[in-house]
Image 1 (tube, rainbow, N blue to C red):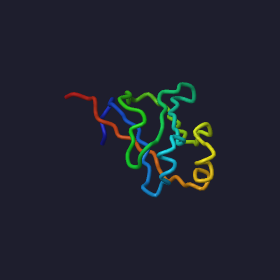
Image 2 (image 1 turned 180 degrees about the vertical axis):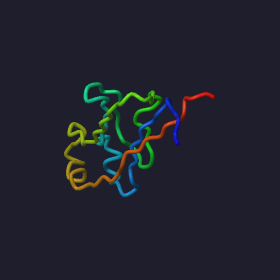
Image 3 (image 1 turned 45 degrees about the vertical axis):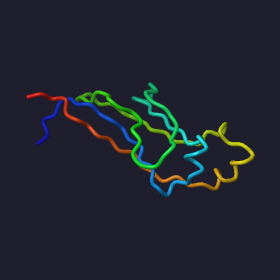
Image 4 (image 1 turned 135 degrees about the horizontal axis):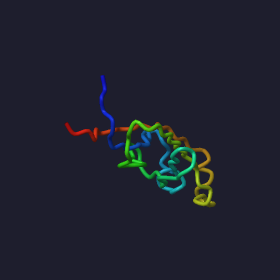
Length: 105
């Protein structure tokens, strides 16, 4: 039985090594995190594979919250020399979350 009533959370974007290099080096792969469909709490650029913390040190309590993570290509980062490669690229990833207990006994 879990009795944790509060903690500190971190959301991660986990990008697979099969992700095309051009997406990571061009600056075109972006993300954002929205809380409760209203508040943008984080945004940035994906520039490497592996585990990327995209939203850190947020309170996790018994209050229900919804987080939406969006990942997209920023067309303003595309140009004559990289557009074809970016459009032919692939991205593989997933989202995970880690919570550390804030309860002190």
